[in-house]
Length: 171
Image (cartoon, rainbow, N blue to C red; front, top):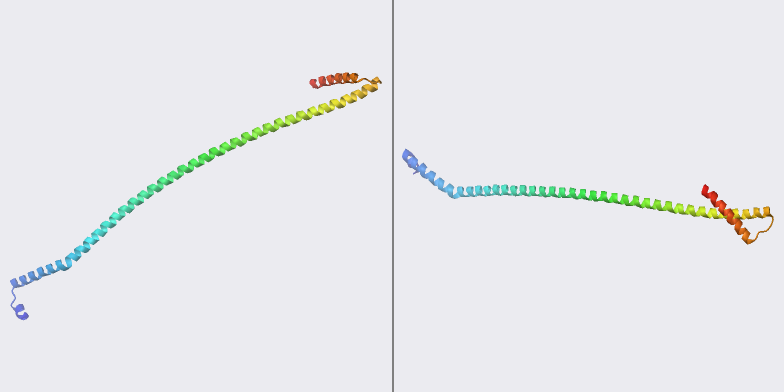
């Protein structure tokens, strides 16, 4: 039978068979291949769109994080500068306080030394006066060769001390 169909075929019949075969092939392709192919293409399109959207989100997030990092870095630098300035001011203040304390201590020590020197000088002068008055009395006793009364001793000492203080005032 197939032999008769092939031998008795005409061009119009061939065209109709080819056309029917083509249409049948198209229907089968649409039913079995076109929908899965279109589904794959749609999924691929959605995947690409999702990847582009995720890339945009990641880019925006990276830019936001970079801006935050820069802001924190600037803030940290400002805080460090503030801390350094405070430390510098504190160090200068401490240095000034130490210098003032040292000056006051030096002044106090100088005053104490002057007082001590003056006290030692007064004690030395009193000791010298005492020694001089005793020597004067002994010398006067030998020169006068007589004993003086207590009043005489006191007058002699007073006169000698007056002369001694006059000579100290001149120096």
